[in-house]
Length: 233
Ligand SMILES: C[S@@+](CC[C@H](N)C(=O)[O-])C[C@H]1O[C@@H](n2cnc3c(N)ncnc32)[C@H](O)[C@@H]1O
Image 1: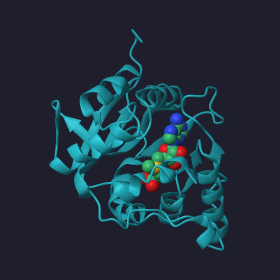
Image 2: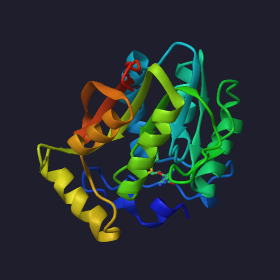
Image 3: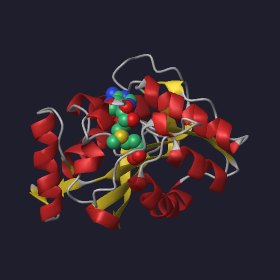
Image 4: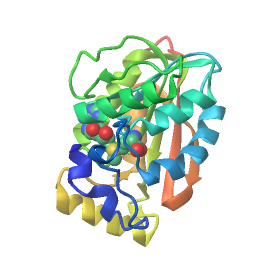
């Protein structure tokens, strides 16, 4: 089982109905896993991506999970090369199966990429997308994500995050507070992150927050844009 599926995380996310689990690969002859939450949020996230990503170039997706998003976004954005990745081999197998299933020419083979393990197996990219990872990983993963993104994205490039956030030291909804407690009970190093702390990490790596977009189910999309280097940098 994929670690986060094994944890029953999506199944017990109190912010969603209890169909939020992935299908077990044994149940699917193609082995491309599906998660109902990813099916539901793909369209609203794509709306944000259309406004944030370049029309062409390489987009690196960190923590691609099942690969559903990668397939959806690559199909909708044919001008970009979509580079999925994940730290978990079962996730990468599912992503590869989605790639085979869809036959999309602009969907690349998934990379074995753990943000905390340098060097990343990829050089400069035009943008990075990371959906639902930083609250389901230790804080060090958020730090590493920002460092890696800062090193690989040139001025003008985007880093897009999606997930739940605390704002001003408080949860934005009771359901997020329950979700946070559930995450921390599973692993004390996990938890819904403070948006301001994430923004501070991004700023330290040369990004400015361009947009904060409220999303369904009390999530946010955060679009960071790499600033031009100043003379003092
Ligand atoms: C809840 S899933 C989200 C998957 C997908 N982005 C989605 O929204 O459906 C979290 C993903 O983060 C990945 N992940 C956790 N820690 C990671 C790390 N340090 N580096 C890269 N990926 C990581 C897991 O393997 C898992 O696929």
